[in-house]
Length: 308
Ligand SMILES: Nc1ncnc2c1ncn2[C@@H]1O[C@H](COP(=O)(O)OP(=O)(O)O)[C@@H](O)[C@H]1O
Ligand SMILES: [Mg+2]
Image (cartoon, rainbow, N blue to C red):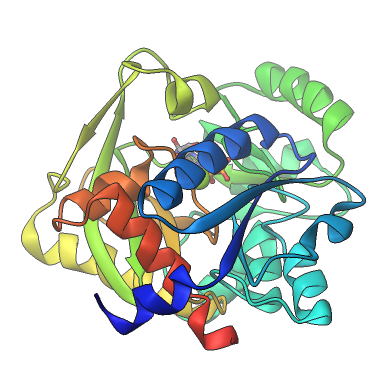
């Protein structure tokens, strides 16, 4: 048995899941899969549903496997608490987590690093005419800091825009507007600073990869490796790794992209804690290089080693 496995077999692992973001349900499902996998591998593991008093539940753990999606959890807050009380944890640190949760700051960084990202409008005052001057329809309305496609709407006309804007503003205060790129949806996971094969995502029944297509079996077709000509395929992996590093992520992540009809990639965002259900994107990508779900979970657990 390798040294690292022995190291973790002697430790108590707390899987942090739940939380109260809009992605709570997904986190519960990711958490259940991770716990099952760690138990199967004979690790001592306990699930910790993160609530406002969760620090009390951390007393008897040696390492935290963070399976929280959205805010708080994926945004550096939980990472900060763990650093403060001295518990090593998986994945990205405070800054990488905070930056990747903020899609506007992420886009500024992508641009500064020469990583293509769709053109966007973000201003304190929302001037609809200006938006329609700057961007062509379709336009994507997006919350600045959500995940799982929550709050994402694609609109074709000014009328649709106004209606969707009103509705979205009721739930999310901070929005931006992005140029819709027709073509392919693709994601590229990173593990230990190495890009995985690119996964092509084809929603079968919906306009885009929305919440329902993400989490309903059979609604989406996944193709791996993505059908992208070799040079452009390599570019997606390069952009993904550059984006991962640029926002300060570490250990693992999954970078979401869209490609135009000429296979030019645009990076949408970096997810520092991507979904980890058995059939989530990152596990599919890992499987494509021969890494089973259990092996992937162990790889992710090992990303905490740098914090011991
Ligand atoms: N600019 C865009 N062009 C085309 N599709 C987009 C664009 N932005 C978002 N989408 C669609 O919406 C989905 C979610 O967008 P993303 O930026 O990844 O946010 P989330 O954090 O909610 O996953 C994408 O997978 C894609 O299907
Ligand atoms: Mg995404």
